[in-house]
Image (cartoon, rainbow, N blue to C red; front, top):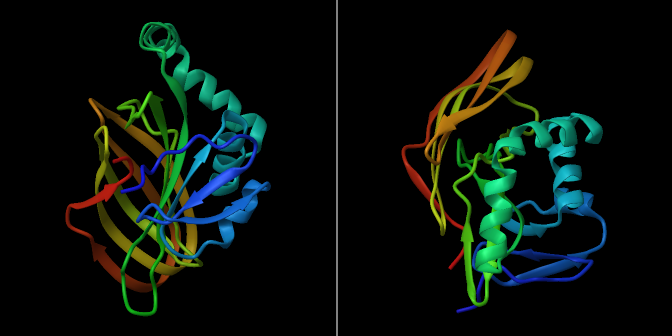
Length: 205
């Protein structure tokens, strides 16, 4: 079985969830054209750009938030890298969420990952981004992620509306369990309540 994480210089290597290569693109925004589940290995700059696209924040603001989030972990991370000779990067995953036969948004996550020799794993650090690509609907609810070395469990619970102003309230948690919250103001034209149940998303193998 192919290993999911591969080091690819300059170009992004795009993978389906079964590990097969889909394409190679030099422009990060081309990821938006992939409709199904995928995962892609990102450099720091690529990750900052993708989070900017997913969140709607300017890249400068995304980088400032990244520096604040990682300030307390920098010394520890550098120590681990030096002693374990690891190579670290980011992975963006997109997971298809079946709400109805005609509406299936995607769960997007940008996670820290590392490899050392033939071994690859996810960090249990706070994900840099977790959110729904809602495709015109407005989500009011919560997304729970529990990150392990090979992937993550997720649970989505909330309501979808056709209209309103959706706000990503951020991600909080401890010990590899993280919750992202969305709120809606001026919600109207209710679409559907949704509860995913606990599901698993494999990332490394």
